[in-house]
Image 1: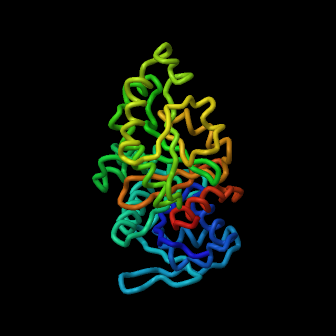
Image 2: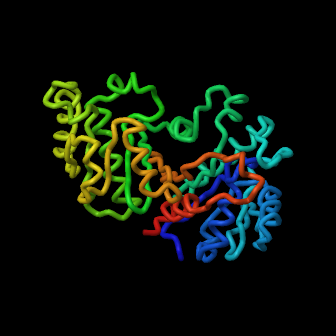
Image 3: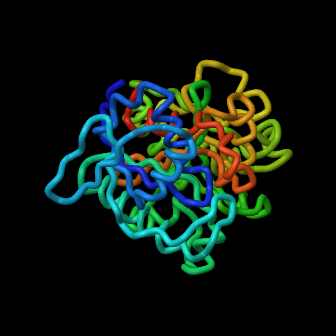
Length: 322
């Protein structure tokens, strides 16, 4: 397998399963043939320790400005040295290390026309040191001064974009607007074309209320906000349909993506369809960012039993392998 796009990788919290699932995704698949297209941002000791635990032999090539990536190696950049770490026991001592790798990897992706893959982090570990840190998506949005980004959860069977993300349900109806839905819909359509290889994506825009509001009896957001947004998307040459009620929309196979109004409207469906291969993507950055759709899993980090399928899909999508 060869990538159509080079990628940068930050492995996330060294105490979690990020390094394990990355090494498994490489060593147990034909991604080994694309190692020269991958640049990893990590202290090499973190990789070396996991290679030894997994009994896998892959050479580490430490990169400097004068060096280029080699085949059959983990091509690695040291953004910051890692403090002592213990699998399964996250520590705020490593917050700066984790964030430095993310900053360096994203800068590399931006400067080198590459995409970014991020391993899982423990938000509480980083926010205990950097108080304004709320997660990968918001951090990258601020770092690259992006007006709007879109979170997409996907697997080989389904793709769901989110108009709102991690907010209370009570605030969802006040957080959607015609402008926001249009901006998110355009990002979704462009992302499906550029990163998922769908030339003319057909997007289903979900309603907010049950039964699409029943013509205003259960709510008027469909009439006042969502329908006008769908019309505007169509006027901007986005192949959008809706609003359709979420309880039946996912049964229709003609759509390439579903634009969901809130987090738990779309995510239970995409995760039920294929939990292990579901990934998280961020559209609207200067590059595509993909990530595993699971956490650091400290409870199993020392057992070496983590499933690597989500990381494998994240790498393939970032490499534009369709």
